[in-house]
Image 1 (tube, one colour):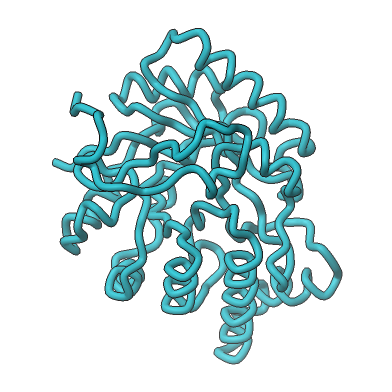
Image 2: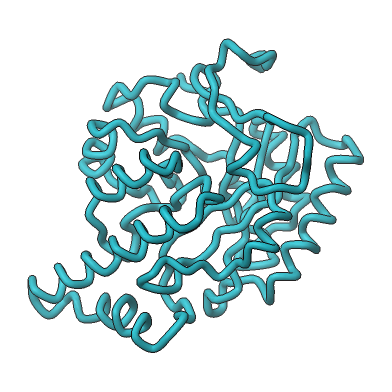
Length: 279
């Protein structure tokens, strides 16, 4: 049985989660993991996003208080799931706020306020037209892929690409190559059970590194990572290519100079180089 030491994609009541930051920490401890990240949706996601960017600073204060209290044997991180909002890969979380986060996730989501009208037409309207034939589907897929790849190249702070292909079809080979080139982790999302086996086979063959996350919106689903464990087992993916696997990689600090973008001070290294012990 594969063990995971962290879950780096959860949502609190500050966006569309049904749990507090403290609930997330408590659930993480109950599930036996050592690290958990609160990564609420960016503000341009209609209905489900945070009220505004300042919300992340409020969450950061909550996270710091929980960590300082030492009530839980879990380290809580503050992150964001930023929305890609244009064909040029713009994000809805500013660089000033990203610099206050421990990690950054990014991805495409429905009902996101675009940067410009042409972006809304090119991504969200075009995806609604995908049902009208192969030509429209291919155009949507190409636009989705372009937006995602642009985001990965333009924003070196991105640590994780969330649920690639969910809601918005993409060219998995192109996405995998971009993740490799930019050292971004390709997420196996257990909450949505996505991507599917065939897509992960493509990404695995190309050599991208993975992270298995819950995308939990409720305490019961924090660290619920069975889908990812099953996929990894079926494909025989080596543990050291799974960033949060006990037997493989491990996120650790390269410097204590916080705050700073996560991508610049957290890295994946082999499990045997750490002093963690299996529970």
